Amino acid sequence: MEASFLELATVPPELATLNTFRNQAAENPVYKEYLALLDIDPSAVTTIDSIPFMPIEFFKHRRVVTGQGVETRVFESSRTTGVEPSKHYILDDEIYRESLEYGFRQFFGDPAEWCFLALLPSYLERPNASLVFMMDYLISKSEHPHSGFYLDNRNELAAKLILLEKTRQKTMLIGVTFALLDLAAQYPMPLKNTIIVETGGMKGRREELTRDELHKILKSSFQLDSICSEYGMTELLSQAWSTGNGIYRTPSWMQILIRDPYDPFRRMPDGKSGGIDVIDLANQFSCSFIQTQDLGRKNSDGSFEVLGRFDNTELRGCNLLI
Image (cartoon, rainbow, N blue to C red; front, side, top):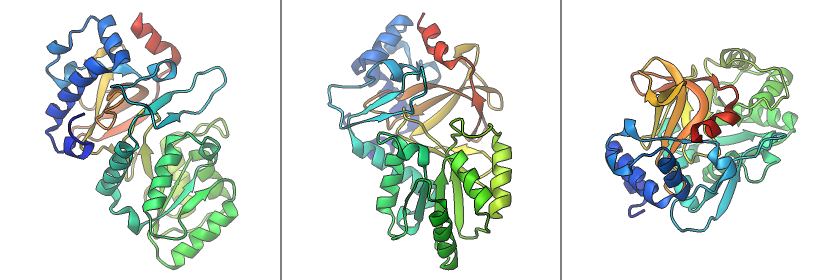
C-alpha cells in the first residue's frame, strides 16, 4: 500500500475502494483464486456495486493475506464445537489502532476523556480475541485510573460504577450480552454519566433475546434512555457503532451493502432486508470485501440495522465456491 491508512481515508471513497479492489485482486492469492472461480476479470470491475465480496467462511480455512508481509498477530474467533474458528492474520497492528481510534472519535470523542469498563468474561478467556485488543487499546488511551477489564467480579464493577457516578465521570461500560444481563439483575442502579455498549454474545448462557428485549431490560435496570451497540468481528479491522435504537453508522472508510439472500451478486435497495456485505478499507493487508453471515437492512442515509443471522451459514460459502 503506497499511502498510509489515514491518507487512504481522505481519498474519495469510490476511488479508494476501487484502488483497493484492484490491489487485492492481484496481490491476495485467496481472493484472486475466488475471482478466477467466478470467472471475473478484475479489469472489468468499474463500480463498487460490481465488486464481488468474499464469503467470510474463507477466514476459517485459508490464510487471507494481501502482499508478502509476515503477521504480527493473529486474531481468532471463538471455538464452537465442531466448527473451525476464523483467523485474521494481521500484518500491521498500527492500521487497526488508527481505524479504531479515529472511528471512536467520530462517534464518542476523545478516548482520553472516558473511563472504560470492559465486562468481557468470555473474551478474556481467549487471548487472541480482537475485542480484547480493541478494549486494551482504548483503556491505554484513557487517562482515568479506574479504566480496566472485569471477568466475573460484578460486585467490584458495581462499586466502581457507583464511585464514578458520584464523581460525574464520563464512563463507557462495554460488555457481552449475558454478562450485562447478569449485572442488570444483580446490581440495578441509575446511571446518569455512563453509557452502556453491548457487543452481542449470549454464548448459550441464556435464552436468546431480541435486541429490543435486551435493550428494554438494560434501560429499565439502569434507568437509561438508550443502549449503544458495537458491530465488529474478527475478520474486520473497523467497527460500526450505534448510539441508540439499534441504528448503526460506519466511519468513512467502511461501507455496508445489502445483497439479495438468494443471489449474492444482486444488490437490494434501501429499506429492503438481505445479507450484509462489508467494505472495510482498514483490511488493506487481508480482504476488504467481506460477505458476512448477518441479515440486515440499510437506510437511505447510509445507516443500517442488523436483523439476525442466516441459517446453515457454514454451508453457504462452500456452495458459492461450487
